[in-house]
Length: 227
Image 1 (cartoon, rainbow, N blue to C red):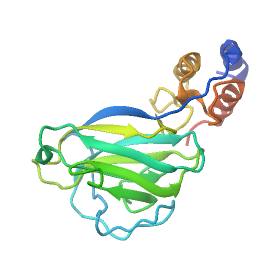
Image 2: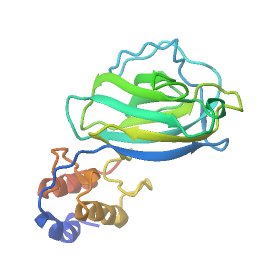
Image 3: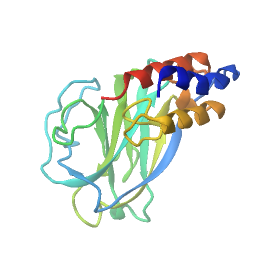
Image 4: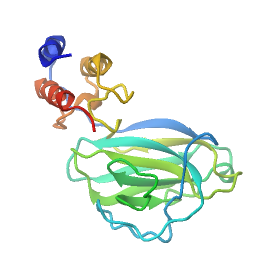
């Protein structure tokens, strides 16, 4: 689909009034034995300094299952802030551990680009990521939810992710709005729906408003494609 036809589809949306958006959000997930595994970083052995591109010190060679979420920020000069709470009846049922990375996680290099890792600073068995790195609104961050141990009785279960205001769930590729790994009409349709609803995730230029400049940024990102 060429830029002209995309523009004609998006043109009606630029007349919407600008809307300031606060951000934040929640989602529920489940770790199961069908999820991929990784050799997770060691919460006590790693010493990430809160910055991107700084290797951590240690990992545990204990394959545990994990889920991945892509997070973006729409507020400059703030700290990454996400809480992960176990939804299981007792702590032993599922003890979550969380890690956040700059960019997309490479599970074969779990110590690369690690910003922060935590297991229970939000109160056992819950994790809280409050990374010291000042987030970049142009950067995608990967939030990994895993288990503190590989013991079968504590590594599977339901959990709740809560993002602080200023952060929102996204995709690894910004214009891939339906998250299927391809750029096509369905992403345009998804973007139009978000714009029509004044949804935070359509604020591509992260200025706190939904307006023509987001439409322009979407067209540019769409034209550039995904890695």
